Length: 514
Image 1: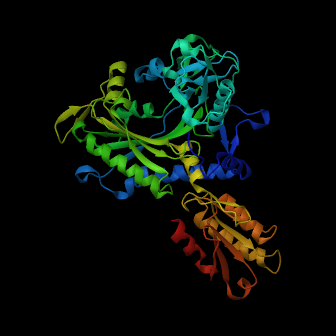
Image 2: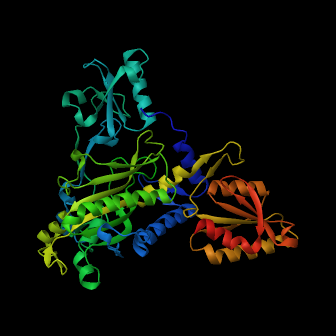
Image 3: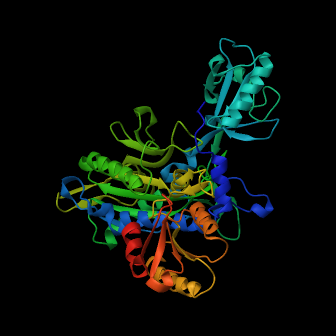
């Protein structure tokens, strides 16, 4: 099992609740599993991440970097509906094939994804009881090991056990398996398919003829509008279409905070190119997307780029088509990693499927090549909520020497509070001076975050609150300000202080925040 990480997920979740980053959805009614709400700071953090993606992908794609062959990177946006004609999902394969293996526990009534369960037994013993646990969940693993030790009447260690995925267990072995939340053996059912699509109904009649689905991904809305985009804009292949928006998957076992939720938001690009250039564009997007996550604060060993093996390729990929994941080491995956963004060469699978099912020609006529073809697609698909979670985990920095004991080291571009403005005391004109500076900063930076004004409690407690919120800089108005128009600037990361002119504050922040 993973060794203990220095960051506790429980502590991170507690700070998220305490400081208004993330709340349990419907909390006053006991919550609802797999759904999360964002508080004031979380909503702004999420907006900052979404806006950064939008600016760097749509408005100023790839920071002006040119693609293969010196081609400029051209991206246009769309915003498509959550509910589409159900034939869309039949064509894409989601209705028939969007399934996860599922097992139920007859005793605890819990439901699990079979590919999330591991089983443990004593090495060399094929007849004794087998204990299941949730893969990646340290508490679940420890409980299973304790149960096995009690059954064997001796303390067992990791070296004494064999591990096996539940999906590889035989029916006979399932009969002697104890579920993660059960006491009796043989209560787990055999794995069976479970469709992840959320059903709904269109219109007032609500019969089976009116079934529709909440979209499980935003990509298909782009593919079915490919012809519209080409016909109504001046884009020419190679070009991309970008979209952000909500998607819904009826996950069997939502877990790990916001990492695996039933309602989530995606940031997706479908980049259309000539089949002969697809490999080069795939490499371009793979490398640039990795560099982008690094640019907003996820540098270091916690971020990796992992190329898929051939046996991992999705149904839309063919031999030789590249697929890679940008993965982050979350506290609950450590020392392993969890997917943050996938970059895939989808070939012409999606356009071909919709062309065949809709009976509408989706081929592109390339005037320069005098050729008609279905473009290949490179898809960089990122999870916005997972991105926010990665930023929260990366920023969380314990520091026992601070009054707050922890600070959130957000990249300034991501920080939900851009600056704090504090009068040292609530008298002598200091609050009025501070309010004037606050108003000036709001004019320049209010579009990307809060400018916090606080005149309550000691200055140390105010700094501590800002540390937990991840505010990069605090400006304090004191007695000297009233005579020489200078302010004290406190740096969040170093806790160091310096004095600058009050008329230099805007420039100071702009140089560091952008």
